[in-house]
Every structure is written in structure tokens, then in C-alpha cells.
Image (cartoon, rainbow, N blue to C red; front, side, top):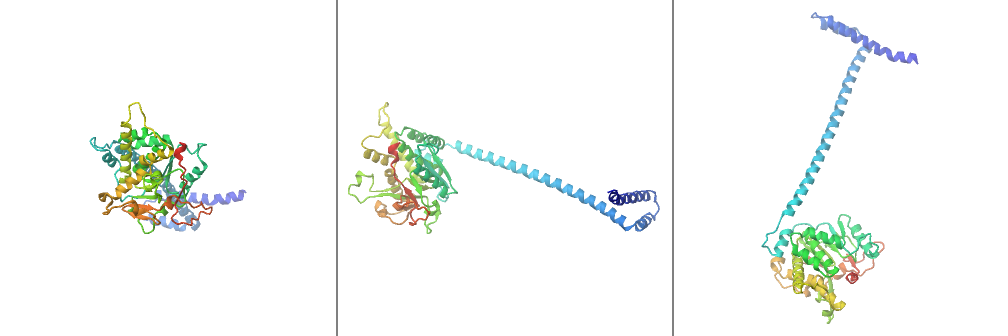
Amino acid sequence: MSSFFNSRKRPILITFFVIVALVVVTRFTTSRNSAKNFQEILQNLPNENVLGLKNLIYNENEKSQDEFLAKLDKQNKKYFQAQEQRLAKLEKQNEILINEIKALKTPPAQASLRERLIFLYPYDAAARFPAYIWQSWKHGLNDEHFNEKYREGETQWAWKNPGFVHELFNDDTAHTMIKFLYHQVPEVIEAYEIMPEVILRMDFFRYLILYAKGGVYADIDTYPLQPIPNWIPENVSPDELGMIISIETDSNSPNWRSESVHRLQFGQFVIQAKPGHPILRDTIASIVERTLSKRNALLESEKLKLTGSSNQRSLEISAWTGSGLWTEIVLKYFNDYIQSSIYQKITWKEFHDLKIPKLVSDILILPINSFASEIEIPKDGKITDPLAFVKHYAAKIWKTT
């Protein structure tokens, strides 16, 4: 052990004495030949000592350089981390500021209801369909009364559309959202709050959320069979569309008036729309006007209510907020050539016995079996009907609310 230690110490001692000798020679050599003499001294030194001296100096320099680079890298990382934190803070402050500016944006006091709705949520035909899925139900997901069939459908909407934001509203959260989105149009909130039945508010809510946010609204008693992007045919560009709906009823019965408001009706249990669409705006304005008009026709002590038999109540709901009113507004839009750019009269006959998707203006109309498919849900997920997009149980859930 001692011989090993001595063998390791010997080069160090030799190097030390060499350095001391160099210092002495340098200090006391003052003649012109000092450099020459110094060079001679180096030449006379043993080669292994000179190499040891050079290696010692090189290693010290390399060590200092590595330490410097490590410190520099550490400082750079610290700087960039602080910079990213500052940028994130600025982005958050900017987002808050933009939201505050939007909240301060107030429509002119003399503007009509429709003008104020346009002011709040203008329509951009060139925008994309937002990746939202909205649903509403009187129970929350964790409520024991949430029907298992509906729970499965709700889960599938999210699972089949992983890139979409999916929100389920109950009565309370829907009310809160409407007050937030339409606080500058108090008539909307008032009409919503005085509606006598949950189904009326659920109908109204779908138009209100789609008008403000866009995306897809789907009734809780629906089950998606295919992802939402599959709804658009290959020969139709999404840029051409402002809305996608389907036929709900197409009656051949001579007694159709006892069953529905219109012989052919467009469904509103599933709708895809861009925010601010004129059809949604006109639907909202019509519902507000009808609701407030009904209320104003009552005595001060009276409240709005649905009356009559179950069938009469169903027809009144359809004409007030449901597919009867929806069909009326859609056809009105088609026949307003300023909005639709259609220069011929459009009636229900254009969609009678529809078998394939039909593009009218910026509205894609799908056949009945697209959003109300009767096929059984396949266990392997393979859909035999390429136009079957959604299964609708049509459970008449308003009767149990």
C-alpha cells in the first residue's frame, strides 16, 4: 500500500520542484538571453516532467471552462423559465382583458331585440363549426335518477368525439349560463324564467347556447352512431355550411294536423350550427316575443301554463318552442332571398321523402334516418347504413319532468 502511495506522490513532487525552479529562474534572469536560457532549461528538463506540467495546465483550463459553461447553461435555463412565466402571465391578463371588453360591449339602447342579438353574437359564415357538444337534463351525471340508457348515450358522445368539449347542463347550470351569456338582453332571461314547463326551457336553451357558442346540441335521449365529422358528405365543404339538421316527421296521413304542427317538420333534437346563425337568432327572438306576449295577455296574478289534453299540450309545446316553430323559421329563412340567396319558393315538398342529404343555401338537410336511425346499436361498432349518424329514442321525456 505504501509503495503504491509513494509511486503516485513521486510525479506530483517532481512537478512541484520543477515549477519552483522555473519561478526562481524567471525572477533572477534579467539578461537578454534570459528567454534563451529559460528555453534551454526547459529542454534540459526530463520529458515526462514537461508533459506533466502541460497536462496540469490544460486540465485546469478545461475544468474552469466546463464550470463556466455549466453556470452559463444554468443561468440561461433560469432566464428562459422566468420568461415563459412572464409570457403566460401576460397571456392570462390579456384573456381577462378581452373578456372584460366583451362584457362592457353594450348594444345601443334604441336597438330592437334582433339587432341586439346580432350585436352580441354576429354571424361569421367563414368560421368553422366549433368543437362543442351541448346536452341538458334535469338530473346531474351523479344523480341516481339519471337513466342508464341516457348515461350510455352521454358517454358515447364524448367517446366518439375525443377532440370536442362536451358539457351536460342541468336546470340550475343552464339557467346560470343563460344569465351570463344574455345579461345584456334581459328579455331573453325574463322569457326563460317565466316559462311554465321544463321542456319549454330545454328547447329554448338549445337555441340560446348554439347561438352564443355554436357546435352540436343533442337531446339526452340520443345515442351517437358515428363521429360528428362523418355527418358532412365528401362532396360538400364544411366552409359552405352554417347548419346541419334533419327531417323529424314526414307524414302521409290525412290527419297529420292532429299529430304535428306541420305535415313535414325539421328536427331540433340534434343540431349542428355556427354561432350567430340567422335561423337561431330569429328563433330566439320569436320565442321571446311569443312568451312575453302570452304573459302580457294574462292578469297580473296569473301565471303561464300549458292546458288541455296531453296531445294538445304537445302541439302547443311544438308551436311555442319545439319543432313546429323551428320548421316555420327554417322555411322562412329559405324564402328570404337576402339571407339565403335562393330565388325560388321553397316548401316542405322540397324535402318530402328525402333519402339522401340535401344542401339548401348553407343548410345541410339530412333524411329522417340520419338523426333518428332505427338500426340496432352494433356491438362491433360497424354501421351498415352510412347515413345513420344518431339514434333517437324519442322518449317524450318532457312528460316525466
